Length: 135
Image (cartoon, rainbow, N blue to C red; front, side):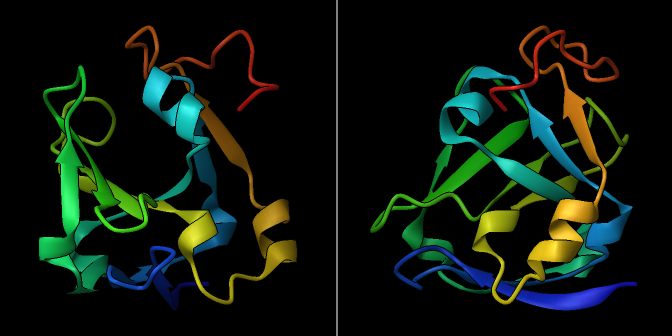
């Protein structure tokens, strides 16, 4: 069931809302930035995501990707969400919301949701990485 969640970075400078259904699944990627930051995310369509505060407080780190915008708070360093232009999975822009940054998320619902693992390290988004234990 879709629910509106509020979320933020650690210091609260960046705040957002997202309409999502955690029970439909979450994702973890094995690319170097997602692995190092331990990103556990849920995909959100642009029309279901609202940045409430902090646009000027974020830094956009692009890394090796031309399409992924790894946004983080310039004050506390937390990455509450990122947005991806389009090519690798959905065919349109989408957001990856960090589930650890959602307020009042039901831990039982989160743990019951299926997790999809993405092989972003090898740019094989439709494949599951051979090793996922560390993600």
